[in-house]
Amino acid sequence: MIKDILVSLRVGTDGEDVAVDYAVSAAAALGAHLTGIAVSYEIDVPPVYTEAFSTDFIESQREESQRQAKTSVERFGEAARSLGLSGEVRLIDGTPGGAAEQIGVMARLYDLTIVNQADPDRMGAEEVITEAVLFDSGRPVLVVPRAQQKPFSAKRIMVAWDGGRPSARAVAEARALLGHAHLVEAVVVETPKSLRKKSVDLPGADLARHLARHDKSVELRKLVPASGEGIADVLLREVAERDIDIVVMGGYGHSRLREFVMGGVTRDMLERMTVPLFLAH
Image (cartoon, rainbow, N blue to C red; front, side):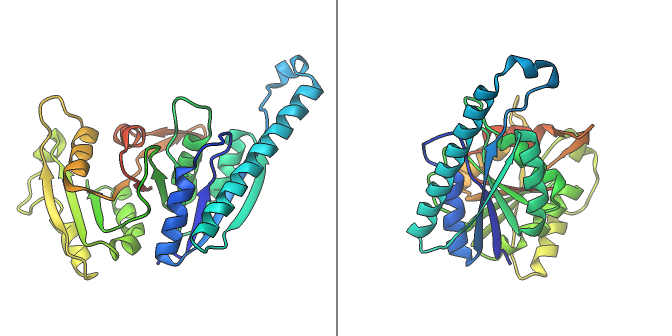
């Protein structure tokens, strides 16, 4: 059961925070406790450039960051109260990378962490926070698209299944959500690699058997890319055609000298997602 949710508050904008609105609706629907985490960001100045920044400038930037974090906390409180929730707030200081690492560690003791999709048109730490939670917490992360308008719903869930370890982990972590679904669709995208595998079963049949033992029926679909289509193209087309609420998939990637490197399909989906994306590694 999902009973303890952490949401990363968007700092540095006075506009709406779609992750907060979505997380509040999720906590209300699931009967979960909700904690908001806000970051007062510090300037990460390389030692060689320290003398180029005055103490007054650094202090003014720190005060502005604290103001922005306070605004985010107030917005979170208003959203929580609108649905009768009493959310808890955590406030931390740090550089974007340092704060993301702290959130990744904190997320280990939450059932789910909710984060905004990164916006390429504005500065923000959403991408590194997503990576830290995904690869360093051992728990799932749910990323909310920038254009999300609908509140939380888990009635129609699509599982992007490839039989790999991250996919298996994602399905296991998402089992609490699958219990709320009216439709669970498991899709397997045909690739040259999958064509080389010989099996008498329909792809994904093993997953369907597994979930059936948890009293959840699954609709299996094999998706064949059109000419020139990538895997993300196929998945996003299916999302639109089947009116999917949440996509569950494994988060692929690895750590290279503590810098996280996303797998191709994972990164494509994070950049182009149209519905919330539930990832586990």
